[in-house]
Length: 332
Image (cartoon, rainbow, N blue to C red; front, side, top):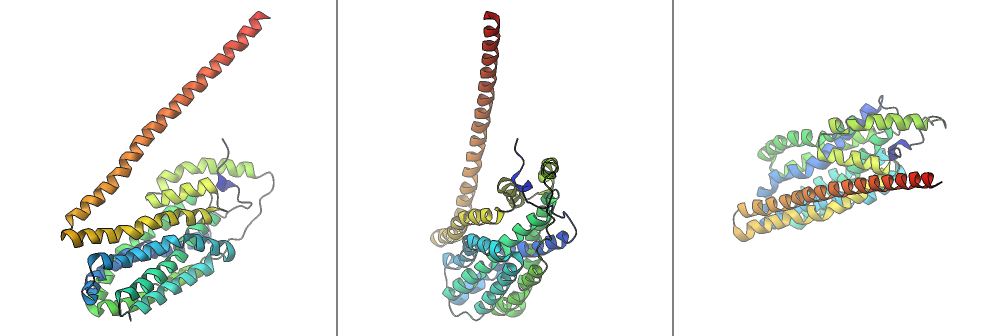
């Protein structure tokens, strides 16, 4: 069995030290990237009434933001490969801050699409991919644990932002809240400043086999360390393509996610506008969740059957070859 692609780094990752500071920085950056668009829904009802928008129109705000974040994945990956994670994350934090501050002066719903959706979403893309990529440069044996800890930033930040946004909304309204959030999200720049490039220690020519054995021994811990689906996805992707191509692979994965996150919220809002009831939206969401689950269940069963047939066929071919050899020996 060939070694995992992540073993071919060309240097020995520190697996600790400043790497844990990088994990904390990624915790903040990833947390804002995933939680920030979801937390803004607190303001949607007030914004909808202020601009006289429909449910589907207001849903486009978070939809465009998420779609921009995912669609800009390849651009973010290219920038990481060219300049490294630190400057890209810091620029991303500035863009999100500028987008939120500009949105606080918005005069139409389209203004929010551009400032919050496009500018803010692009800034979040510059926060997400670099944070995922840099962990793979600092960790090898402990990478599943590091990825799992970094991905917990999403629920923790969402748990914090939800009540904070409610308090800001009650105290300052949606315009004042957006202005304050523009300052809060600049903490991503602080997180980016902590992501200094790893000091690479080149391995000797006799060491790769040992690295392969350690990586193979450490890889089963993925199930224990990566509890969330996203963490497991990125960990598996790292094993498949390796650290050198991981940023590009993440960019391609996120751009595939762009379509569903762009169209899903407006479609849900349109259902509410048409039927005047939320239950039909939940029915449709349930169907969309159920169908892929059934598909994966059936395909897993089909895959296991095919594997069993291949193993059986290989065993039959091996026995046939052995019988042929024995027959030739007896004839001689």
